[in-house]
Length: 53
Image (cartoon, rainbow, N blue to C red; front, side):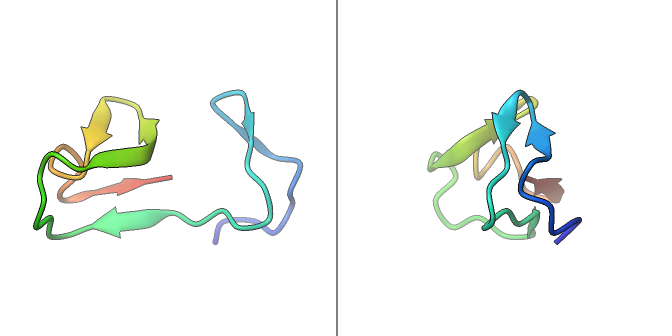
């Protein structure tokens, strides 16, 4: 968790109390959409080896 503040915004959206940054090491379903697309990452397969919010 980067910071406990709930008022911080990420890409113009409120982060909320349950924000976590996730590092994707392995994806078993490459075409599974991310809950919140992040940058150029749209699926879990796109995000392998990266951190997404």
